[in-house]
Length: 616
Image (cartoon, rainbow, N blue to C red; front, top):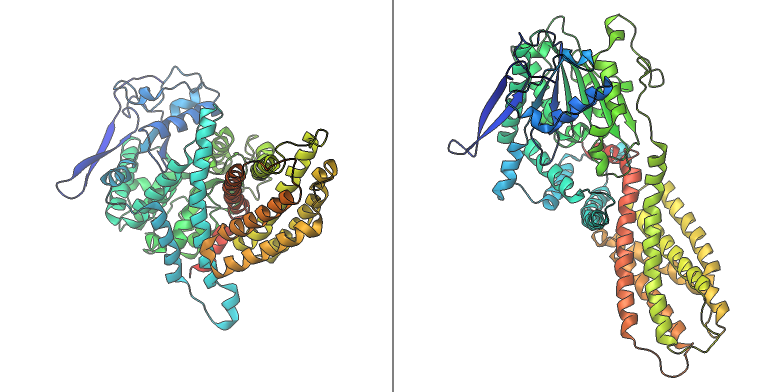
């Protein structure tokens, strides 16, 4: 990238906090002058998502993906975009001549929510604001006639939603600690809590604060207007991420509804959304998108819209509701958004990190560039592609699943839960053994293999109890509830075979059988379900209290009927070990809840279907 002339910088200033407030500058830089960059035919406008954004970092990521597409080294440091001699338009000599036909712009709107956060008295606390979303759904809930009442949301759906949201926020705190440990161990660095807080804060600003939303939309319109003025004959292609997709759609709707739509609206040819929460906004804030159909513009070409989302991304979803909204409200002539362009996959390992990994995914950008930015097939009059399997342009297929991440992200969280339960069961085992037999008879020591089998059996029983007690609280589907019963029976059966292992080593230790342990565990599960049904807000606490008390009673009973030689050992390690046992079981239960919600509600999009059922 060479500097042939100084870049043209468009700056829009907006006041924050009234007439005497701070002035925020939103800058969009769109390459060098038209004379020096006459070959520019396409301008790519990047719109960043949530969080604390670095200026020009979004456009740098987009430029890097275009360089990779044309097999050009993406060695463009961030400082190049700040250099007064640099330009966002490529000019020769270049490794790939195609790059000189491109220019880039950025809509940087992060300053507006950042100022709201820095005030410390503007945004509502994240947990409290999240709970207001449930009450928002209550206001829009319509029970309907008796014939349709069963198909609509019920009161317990709202209670379930409040419980799940509260536990998810609580679990994020736990996962934040795990991410901290992983960071210290040098495995990976990821701030999950910051992502959640930033997302909720930015959503508040865009959806709830009309004055701040106005500033953001003005900045969006200003950048598009300047881009078109800089290159009036060039196509405009927008790449938007996360909450930036909502900003983009609102900006486009406003521009196309104007009595005299801006000239740049006729140049917008492509729209790429990644990790988009537009469907959530259509459900929770439909008033944001109200305003009537677009102003007729004869001869305008529909904007080719491609949406990409990872099924593990808790923010981005399929935009089927957006497609229905487009068709129902007369916007089909503006947006060409076909079902085969709404592309979902499983390509990233973690649910939170999946929301930011799109920027490094070459397959996603390669597909958009090949299909939309330079679609020769569309210009030659060839019919549109019928389905995803046929959606191949010049050998560029639809991004598919990463099988390694698909299966590892499915299995590893449950293995982590089992590992935590194994550790939870090991602590009381060692403490009780030291209490009952501080000086064991020579030859009666329990072997390592027997200890492992006993602890594994206890962990399997705890896992089965967790599944049986929690699944009915996390889903209303009878198939999953039946699955919980079956899984509990299988795990309890395996546990009954493993637990007597220590009894076979020491004949004085009474073995645990299926009746002596299985029946109390069934009673605990049923009782915890009853308490959770009466008090949904208690969540995992009834199972912890009842299950912990049951196991402590059984363990102490086994210890008292098998005294060791001499006086028993100290009791305080037993109490401490059970405190650690309860804490680890609680952590394992939270992670299990979050994993199940992620796999069922997020990956299978059931959460969005539930939200639509709750709303009018």
